[in-house]
Image 1 (cartoon, helix red, strand yellow):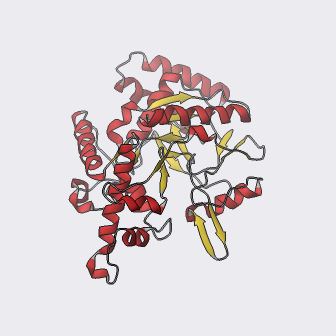
Image 2 (cartoon, rainbow, N blue to C red):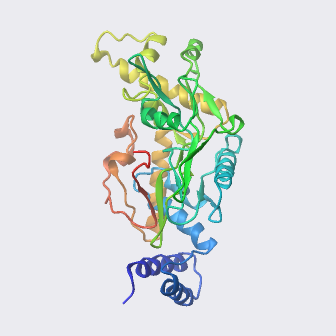
Image 3 (tube, rainbow, N blue to C red):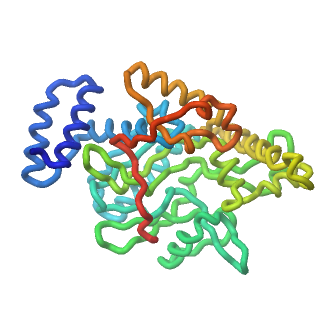
Length: 355
């Protein structure tokens, strides 16, 4: 009787060989079973790893951008051994994925298991500080910022201070590495018609790189596998900068644009939200940085569904995440339903080590 690992390996290998139309799947499976019998685990080939990482994106129930799953660039960093190696690999990922603004969907896969753990939620994120009863920067980063400070990192206590890379190898204590400034592309926000909008001094970073999810392929877990696509505008304009538990800038935006906030029924929040999102999309486009609006993203998701249907594959999804946070009923996704089944390969949430 096959072990659970052997069963998971078989399921993935058979899928890999079938979808890539390669022969000799059973020969490969025989070798894997022998390796599991001898060592208790097995090693994916680079080709298997690459396809498995792409499948993890295709199976990501919360992602609206899955149309581009086959375009994921996979960097094999499984031979990484030292802290400097990890730092250089993270820098390479950031540089390659940013691509001077023409963002490339990218994943870097570090050694299997928990040998390498990245402690950041995203590789790039702004710090948050609590000072004299008020919060400076990103409230979502308060706890992690305090942890970075406990390691010896010191920020400038501004609204948009870049947190360092924090990671650990094996049982060693975590280390931090400041991110080289020339690797981080940021976009200063301006409005297409209101010049004074720039006085709000808002900005955001170009590439969202999720760093704290576990990648699972064929029963193997990779706890360090940072990955990115590009931003959907509402992630920045309707959430990061607008949520009252994040940067909470809607009132400032409304006042800057002369929108009357005297009563809720004027829908000043909605008007300010639209204008803030217009500014985000305009600014990224002017800066030559890849971004997609939520209406286009929703249409791309419909194309993804059609592509999967042609391959006789069902599309799973988490409706609450797939609908955009602004004007969701104006997208077809809002009127659809999905089975929220977790297929593998996939990405899984893990508790943050510093918590």
